Image 1 (cartoon, rainbow, N blue to C red):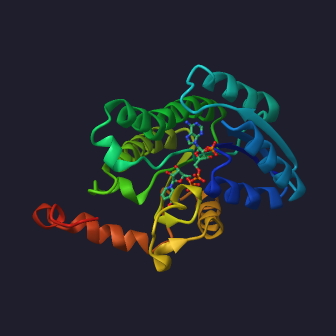
Image 2 (cartoon, rainbow, N blue to C red; image 1 turned 45 degrees about the horizontal axis):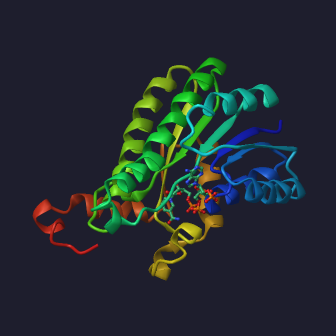
Length: 247
Ligand SMILES: NC(=O)c1ccc[n+]([C@@H]2O[C@H](COP(=O)([O-])OP(=O)(O)OC[C@H]3O[C@@H](n4cnc5c(N)ncnc54)[C@H](OP(=O)(O)O)[C@@H]3O)[C@@H](O)[C@H]2O)c1
């Protein structure tokens, strides 16, 4: 039977690649994003790739007043949702977050609070239907605060901890929670960065891992897989050494 998929942050490079995999299987998609024009482009592409049905909803992720309306609309259209993916996020300018307090708070809000708001809303509805998978994109950056991106890392750590507790809560009602921790991925988010080519994945390969992890009801996904080893080493470094490192 075709699945019903809800994607928040549907214009993200990673989310779009995931959506394509579901569209090719004939899934019905409910896509949420803040930019109507980009959303329509993605929606048209997914319909052409074989999606059973594509519905869209325009929402700025920090607009928590609109969130219940968006969720009501998704459940009204599809009846049940098999998979929800929360994907939106920004990569803050770390140096600016160190001096500009409103900017730092706004970035934390987009990357942590608005994501948690989505999870709160999704959790209640999934708990009621008693099945399905909630997947949320965190980051390896949440595993340990580094000099170069600790505001972003702190937001992703908040998501990681929240999703861990939510997983334990929803397990009893048959609902699964997947935390996705990508390493470097070549999307518009990282377009201006000088990333090491050998460590940088394509959105398509990350999407393949995400699609598989959802199907297998995995708890935590590091993608590509080798980031589990890299982060094991990074987390194991003693603070006395770690604080001297420039990355
Ligand atoms: N790329 C990486 O190396 C990497 C690594 C680890 C984790 N991640 C995470 O993966 C997720 C997807 O990122 P990506 O790499 O696919 O980057 P992306 O292509 O830049 O996508 C980011 C998405 O977030 C949306 N967004 C940002 N702020 C928003 C807001 N206030 N309201 C609504 N939507 C908002 C953007 O919307 P617009 O299209 O309108 O701008 C865009 O769709 C993010 O959570 C990111 O933190 C990425």
